[in-house]
Structure formats: structure tokens, C-alpha cells
Amino acid sequence: MAIEGQTNVRSMRVGSGSIDGLGRELGRFAVATMELPWALVRDRLGATPAVVLEAGSMEIETLDRQVAQAAGCDTLLAIGGGRAVDLGKYASWKLGVRLVTVPTILSVDAFTTPAAGVRRDHRVEYAGTASPDPLVIDYDLIRQAPADLNIAGVGDLLSIHTASFDWELAERSAKSEYPFNADAVARARALVADLGSKADAIAACTDEGLQAIVDGCIRLNTICLPAGHFRVEEGSEHYLFYELEERLRRPFVHGWIVGLGVYLLSRLQGNRADDAVEFMRRVGLRHQPKDLEISRADLEASLLNLRAYVERRGDLWWTVINEREITGAWVKEAVGGLEF
Ligand SMILES: [Zn+2]
Image: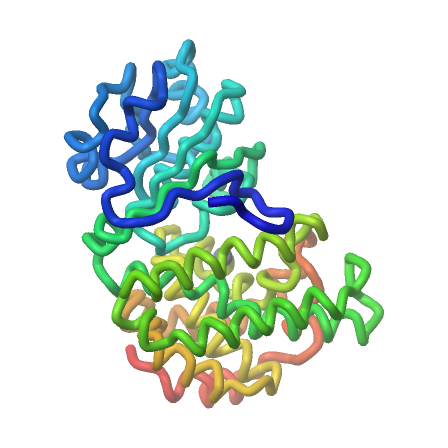
């Protein structure tokens, strides 16, 4: 399947069973994966990889050691979720070899973005650029993952709701770091509206629903890659996540915590918060602190620290956090409707 527009995905192979025999096309190949997805796929590839790299720590030193093990391979086959895909992207970029990506879960959009999310001293960094050829979307395989984790893939698309608003706000305050692009914002919002029109299919993880998430991620790339940044999709809702991650030093289901960010920051923005919540309810996107095991005390402390946090970092874009003060009274009210 050919892909239109500037995107990171060179080609796509779609349909249940599309992983069967895939290994026979790859020459000498290395697999980047984790135990669970590998167990689902290994006997269906029709060929044995030269080496299997297990995604674990994403610290850059660990990744470089793993890349060395894959030297001499023609293809990096990434099979799994965000970490396995990021390891595959990083290794294929470092080695300069073809990348084939098989997401076994749609929880994060790593399978469509060019750079690999890695860690240096626990902080996220984006390294390199790699494009899957092909991206393999096997619906039955993806449906073996928990439905609410596949639906988590919607989080980084719904974040357009708050992030695009942040960009407009920055533009009005003459603080935008990039030339403002009203057309990009309009296209991003249309993407969210189209997702909303498939809410039932997404909630049920039908072929159509899973494909809607994949297509949404690819469409987002056609907006963001030509611009050279993800301003329409990343804003204050992600900055709350960064603060919480640094505070609590543990991983979260990305789409869920972004959903929590959309819930809270759309309120701070005065930006149709009820619509965002209704969208999450219809597609089944979990976002409650209870789901994320975040205590009320931690969430309140995080919100109260949020402006100081973004100002201290200095590398984050201008958002509502810079403009509207987060008071104790606002925090009490905003978290009042959440479940802990
Ligand atoms: Zn994100």
C-alpha cells in the first residue's frame, strides 16, 4: 500500500495474517522485541533471525551495546510495543539498514515516528531517524494485546485538542517558537474529528477502529514532519506528564497519562473540556489517576509545581502553563472530579 503525503512510513502491509512468512523476505535479519510479542510471532515468521535483541533499559549505553550485536545484518525487524520499536529504529539508524516494523500493540505511536525515544540519565531524548518499509499492521496480532492498551494509542492524537490550543495561545502572545500555521492546526483538528466519528469502532478494536488509530498517527506525521516539529500535538498536556515522570520516576501508559493531561489542561485553558472528556468516554480512553496509580497528593503537588518545572527546563514550548496561574483553589476544583 502506497502512502500519500510526507510521512515517515515508506510502505504499509495491512491485514490479519500479514506477518506470516515475513522473515523469508528479509535476508540476514536482527529482531528487536520483548518476551511477550516475540512468543506470539516467532513461529510465524518462517525464518530464524541472526540475533534477537531484547528491549529493556532504553539508556543510550545499553542500546549501543545491543546495536553492536546486530552488526552484519541487512534488516532490523522491530516487533512489539514502543520500547521494542524504538530499539529497532535506533539500531537500524545506527547500522544504516532497512527497518521493518510490526507493532503488536498501538499504545504509543513509535511505529510511525522517525526518531527513537531513548533515555539519557532517565530523561527522554529523540535520536536518529528511521522509516519502516514496510509497516506491517496485522489486526489479529494487535487484538491479542489488551483492548484498553490499544485504545491508549488515541491519547497522542487527542492531545491535539490541548496542544493546538497552546500553539494558538503562544501565537497570540507573540511567543510561538515556530511560524504559526493555521492550516496545520485545522488539519490536526479534522483528524481528531474523524477519529471521533469512528469512536465505536475504536472502542471495540475492530479492524476499522485499529486502522483509524494507525491512519491518525500517519496523518499526524504528514502535518508535523514537513513543519519539522510536533507543536500541534505536544503541549501542556505532555508537560504535566514530564513533571509527573520526573517526580515519580516510573513509567506510565503514555496515552492514559496524556489523557489525564488533556482532562486537566483543557480545564486550565477553558477549552471545551467537556468535549474532550466525552471523546475519551466514547473511545474508552482511560485517564483516571486510579488507572495510573497516581495519588491525589502527588497529582496536586505536580500541578502546583508545573509552572516552575517548565520554566526551569527552558526547552519546553510556550503553553497555557506560562500564562494562567495554577492556584491551590484551581487544583482542588480541577482534580475534584477525578477518581483516585
Ligand atoms: Zn506523546
